[in-house]
Image 1: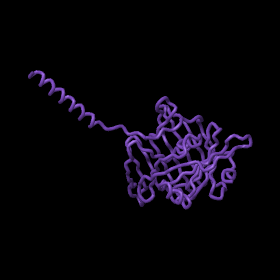
Image 2: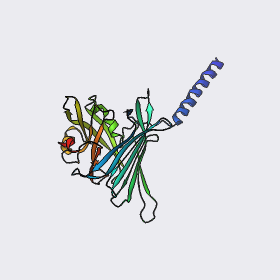
Image 3: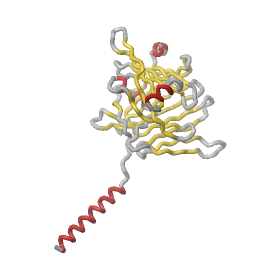
Image 4: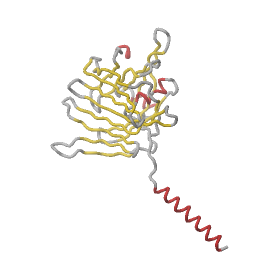
Length: 271
């Protein structure tokens, strides 16, 4: 009996130690978002247009496969010789390899004089977002941090992939979060939905407009969307790379621009 008690006590101690070790092990942090694997790789030339749909500069979207098997998307848009934004995201294949999960996202903005406005970083591996502003008069850059939620749904960059279920008609609304840096780092709830579907001359669906914006709740969002900038993406569901264009401010409080794929007439998107 004494040996049995000693054995049971040893088991309890072993279980307690194992539990303590498990609790002390840092939990793996991952984005809660899965995105479709792109069908097209390479550079997609585009143009930056102002709010009046006049061309003001180049733009491009680059999708590439890295040596480690991850996928990187890089987009750049802006006014020639003036304000611009460069954004990137690295994604890792998950499951059977047909889906991707964001690992890191970054956005860098520059004002009309080419002066850096700051860097927005999202690191899903450590569940942290940062907003870094350049120092003034030789001072060190100022970095502010915000923790991401567990299994976060923060998507700033690969919105063209995030909206894929809407384009295909597999979802009516997508809910996600965006990291904002203006006024201090904070996460804001967003939602996206289809606001227009148009058929081509052959009767097939050729144009889908997805509009997105802050999620203030069902009724409040309908009212708020009447006053906030019109944030939209346009897609051709039949194309191997469906993205056609998007409209958004170049950066927080920056000029509103259209980024339009080469060969696409901007006026056909908004008519």
